Length: 264
Image 1 (spheres, rainbow, N blue to C red):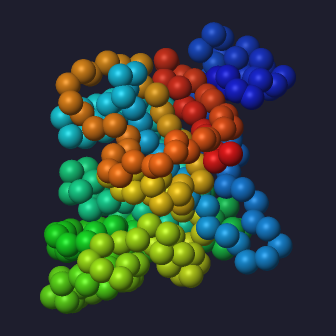
Image 2: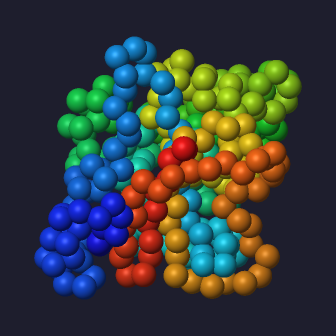
């Protein structure tokens, strides 16, 4: 892996160590590259980052899944971003399509998470208005850290009861049936989850963007072309004016670009 931006002396040394393609970075190096902002002296404010992958022609999926357009380096970054987070926010459709499982504890990050006051693994926070979820799945019945279900006050009481019976914690984050993104971020912060990561899907990411609560986007640009009518990384409502983000860093491996943008 090579650092392309920002350009420093380390960038040159990294490339020289492993030749033109660079070398495989350690998990500690990746964790340092993707560290969350240091909290201020007052109560830590939530920081929400998104992690998505897109092909050169803008597809976020191929045949309904993101795995075909990913790569081993992308999965390493994926794992590191999870290991740094307090909670992973994900939409119900993505849970169904990607076969989500509970986040696992990783020995390589155990000491760092303990030092940061975090649990052994991030909680998975599923956003769902209908609660049309299979609560018999391990994500709900046997997670290392209790799974959260974010929904609205108008959610079906029977589905709420089913979620709680399975072991999930239901968090109300909206007055109606749906979830209000800003309220969801605040509710998670109230539970102590301020280092937030969302892995989509596109509809959820679009809602977070429209609500102006996304602080950072980690976007992997896959050197592939798929054509077709696959979704973009963000869908749903548009914004009145485009949100401007600033490039914070860019890494490269095997033609894949690992970009990191922060709100201006």
